[in-house]
Length: 364
Image 1: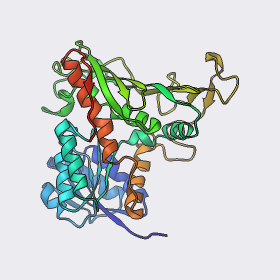
Image 2: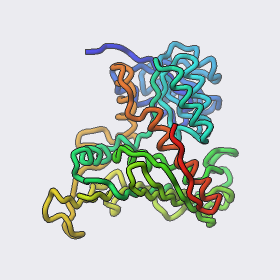
Image 3: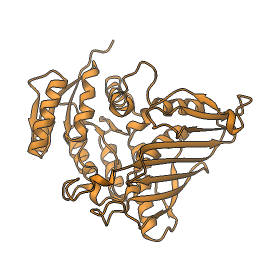
Image 4: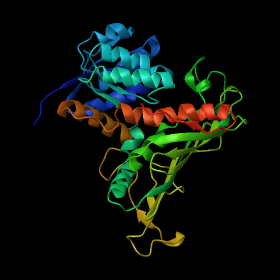
């Protein structure tokens, strides 16, 4: 039994508070320090986490450089999405392992910088915090594909519907300058593309995309709230992704994979937390027709697992990160995976800006 303890800090106590809470359930981890430049968020996040990990000696910082000097081995980066790469690079320069929220990069230049920073510190671990890859049904699909049940995958699709009730539209719903007030929705596609690439063991090589000119929220008129992208993969498959930050789209994630020996999809009659998978498999006679699809009763978490924190995904993700550090293993969601699931969304938006022209997706 390995008794090594990974001392952790978290920067960004909005989303970061929920992720860091998961450390309380990991025996090889200890939360030591927290950081946020916003005094109100720092205070509330500190109080919540001190109680969650039962440690009144938790240290709080408003300055990131000072935070990095604290006695920690690893940093959970959960700041606003547009600031991740500079913060990660500083953490590496300070000798800290990193678990970074998504999207991992915001430009081709940032992808180059992140790849170079990780390569310059081979003794340190970088892991992308794409929690949806840890949903139980996604893990199940990945194993089914590895076992050959889908054959060669020809097509996959996913939808991220992030709704806001029109009654809640207001100029102050998000703080002024918040990334969600201007970032095109299609750039935030890793919750869909990440799990698909994780199952398919593939990467995107080109994209074409269109974005709707119709906006739901009158207070974010410049943001492209709905985008549809088509990707070609290195293995020859096609992926379609819809991301919509609008009204009357509910709040859900839907997935489908079509292969030469089987097809599987989430049941759209239920939200993802409760949805079973429906499959037609060549290896299971009688499941070919629409009325006889096989019901696979796996949702976001397996029976007996804690379903809190994005359907149990947050806790499994944090535990995996800590295990990688304790056992000195390379994460599956490494820097290459991080770039491969983040960069396509950046170039999808660029394609839409240019009228849907096909764009090549570089590999680093």
